[in-house]
Image 1: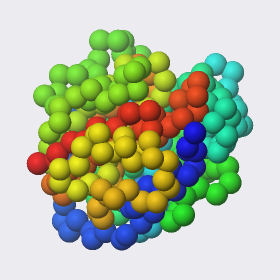
Image 2 (image 1 turned 30 degrees about the vertical axis):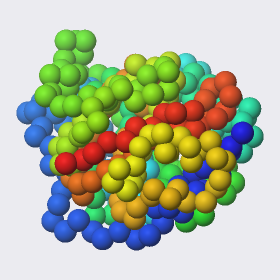
Image 3 (image 1 turned 180 degrees about the horizontal axis):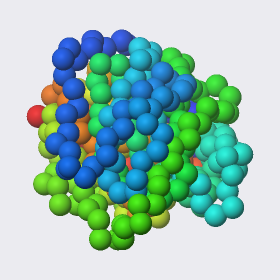
Image 4 (image 1 turned 180 degrees about the vertical axis):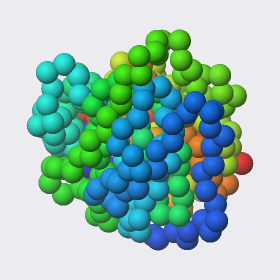
Length: 304
C-alpha cells in the first residue's frame, strides 16, 4: 500500500519548478452587494487577514501568497465541533499525515468528527484565488501548510500556527440567506464513492462551485499535465507503485480547493493558464488510509 507522505512528496517534486508570475492577472469575482470581502495573505506558515470579524452569511476570501516556494500557500478555514479543542485538531492532523495507513485513516475519521472545514484554497505566488463560502456564527481558525510540504514532501507531523477568525450572529435567519447556488457556475460534486463528478471542460478564467456530497472530507488540487493525458494513464501510474515524478506532469502553477467537509460547498474564482490539468484528492481514506487519488479520485479536465 502506497503511503500518503510518499505520494505527496512525489507530486511536490513534480511541481517544484518555479513558475512565472501571472503579471496583472487577478482572481476577480463579481460579488453580490451583501457579500463580505476579506483579504487573506499566506506566507506558507502563517495567515494574515484584512479583518478578523465578520457577520454570518456569504463571505468572499481574496487569497494570495508571498511564498515563492513550490508549496505556495495551502490555506484551510475550519471551526471546531462538539468538545474538540485545538489540541484535538492538531492530533487529528498529525494522524492524517502519518505514513502508517491505519493511523492516517484514524486522522481522517477524527477530522470528520472534530471540524467543519470550508476550504479555502491552495495558491501560488502570482496566481491569487477568491473563495466564496457561507459561514455560520462561531469561532473559526485558518492555517497555512504551504511550507510543510517544502520541496521534498512533509517531514514530521505538522504543528501549524492558527489564526482566529470570528463570525458574528447578525440576528437574521441565515437559513433564508443566499448560499451561492444561484450562481451560473459549473459545479463539481465530491462524492462518497471518492470520485469527482462534473464537466470535463472548465473555464481557465472564471468560477467553479464545489459541493461535497460525501460522508468525508475532500480536497481538489489541480496540477498541469500533458495534453492527451487520460485518467487511465494516471491510475496506471498509481497502480505501478513508483515514487518518481509522473511522466505526464508539466511545470506550471498548481491550485485548488483545500479541505471541504461533508455537506458544505465553496465557489472558487481564479485566472489560470489554459491547458490540461488533473484534479485530485489526497485525503486518506477513513478505512484503509489510502489516499483517495490512488483509489481513483482523479479527473482530467481542460481549462479553456
